[in-house]
Length: 405
Ligand code: UT7
Image 1 (tube, rainbow, N blue to C red):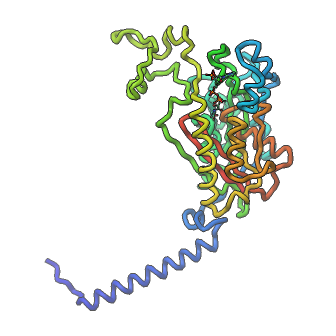
Image 2 (image 1 turned 90 degrees about the horizontal axis):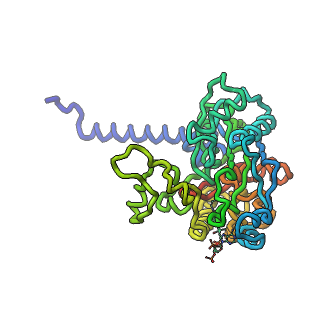
Image 3 (image 1 turned 60 degrees about the vertical axis):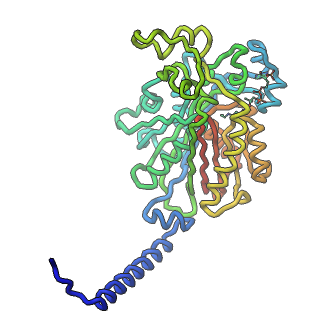
């Protein structure tokens, strides 16, 4: 056994000296961190060496064809009054069948965003594509977009995000992380939806169908050396408890599993156990229209008006700002009544909130970048403004982002 060479007194002094040394190092470190702080001690303290990312260019595209509420009254039992009163929507855009897709619309928005960011398409280092209405079940729209843009030669990574209404914000947050760490310089973030190809245009589907529209938005995320600008924070949340309250469950490989666990027996027309396959899409699903999106509207509404303000306040409090500091709130365009409710809850004026659901309906992952671009084009977002993006939707998933423009 080794003999203890230090007396109690000596080890006490040694421990004390070590402790004092540690304190000195910590003090020097914190001095260095706060000298280099970006906008708020939280970031500086946690990620002193990281860059800040900014949105360098944005663009959007909506298909040419406008579909008014009155046009829909010709194919299902609904009225212009009902739609406007409950949602604020007056019209939406539908893509050209066989000629336009989620990917092709995303490509148009991308070209605009890249041009405004001052980069060529071949300079894109990474693609993040958010959609719930992909061209194919797989592969995702990210690779299809790469091909559509003619930039496959660089073989950059492409990632698809399946977070519905909050998809663009999740994608933006991912881009932010990649840019901040210095991994990529030009990350393309796209949100695009071609809802009109997969909706139930009979009266059975009217509560969902009248709400949705087609469109795409894109943003190029780049690093910035300007400590006053860029994405200050992003906040992401989800809770799968109510996954089926707003869902597109068929076709799918779930085989009724989740419904059984929830104690709900739903007959999807599955074949006997001893047959192979035939779970994904059954004749019954086709005959009874069980392959459309469905929504418990009021339930979703109640969650939305709770989570929007919550996630916005969370972001503000993290960077030490308040709702009064918001220059422009771009909420996901789910329902004008939801946006108005959120506006009132946060005490924002009409000038602080951008709404365009009246013209486009709910374009899910595309709604935030479309609204952001539109507000920017209208001159309502200027350099130095504090822009807040927020979304809530199926999953449930919800998110917010704060950007010093
Ligand atoms: O973007 C993702 C997140 N989505 C949302 O946040 C959407 C949240 N929910 C909503 O926006 C609203 O709940 C809806 C706009 C979807 C529906 O409005 P609502 O005021 O909640 O209506 P409701 O679903 O409670 O339906 C009320 C009535 C029903 O008739 P009865 O049972 O009272 O006779 C529906 O059948 O309205 C009927 N209805 C319609 N009537 C005419 C449902 N859709 C329509 C329609 N036209 N399109």
